[in-house]
Image (cartoon, rainbow, N blue to C red):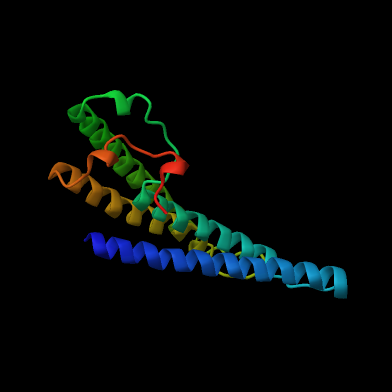
Length: 171
């Protein structure tokens, strides 16, 4: 399962790079066309916004996998190992609950907006909100796997204390 999640996150990384590259091309091209030729892409702003939202949610999935979200471990790092495991288990339970809420809300927004179209591209707004559904399902699976690893004792002591400082993240 770890290998599948690793490959999935690597694929998401490539998707994020593609989103960012396309955003740069769209915005830069639009700036050049507007200032140089007094014209531009009509869909540039809207598509860039959609790509940014998707890139953000995909990045959040990868951050969950790499445990790279912001956090503090000042208290938890000082606790004994069994209490660190308890805190991590509670964190996983709360994260799974939040993923469930995110799934419920995103799914409702997707269904509500399936018939609505975007102003410029005239594409179903459901595609915009389904990014939250993808995040919620992916995040739930990754956190459930991490919780399973904690439950069966396949998690290292270094991962018990929670997030690491940016200088401590392995490259």
